[in-house]
Amino acid sequence: MLSLRLLGSCLVMAVLQLASMAADAQSATRPRVRLPSGPVRSVILNHCVSCHGIDDYAFHALDRAGWQQLLDVPHKQQRGVQLEPADEALLLDYLTETFGTESVPFPRNYIAREISEFFNNADARVFLQRTCTECHELRVFEHRKDANGWRALVLDMRERGARLSDQNVEKLVEWLARVRGINPVD
Image: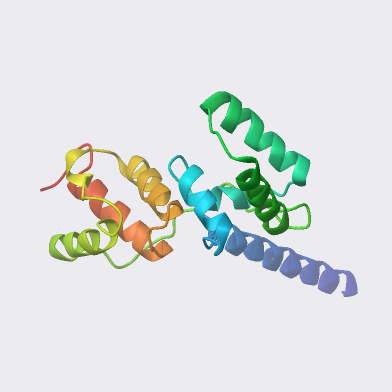
């Protein structure tokens, strides 16, 4: 009888552990990195964000030599990025301090959250106008993508600074896929 009770307790613990792991997996999203203040902010804005958002930094936990290699190979050698030595030192100081070996790299997988609220056409257009035009003109109506294509674009925009909650990411992706998808329902 005692062994059955122990077995039952072990099963309950295992189920709780699996549920906890599933909840952790569901909470994985893009990291949210705040643009730093001070001189390094200008370096990042002038040399980094035209190709990728600053959230990409959080996917790494590197020492100074690792960050230097990441700057040298894909950025300087492959893309021709040119940094003044003082700007490079500022950037390396920031990256090493903020995303050094003591930090925990953010997981690379985004898990789409299930939504129960959806945009109607009018609300979606207002949301797009308010959110997207902070940085550029509205261009979504020039494209057609499936949900995964829209999700990649919307997450990229969030990575570049668009203020979008996970809930609004998924509401926008659902609406764009429905209205500007491969087989839209207009």
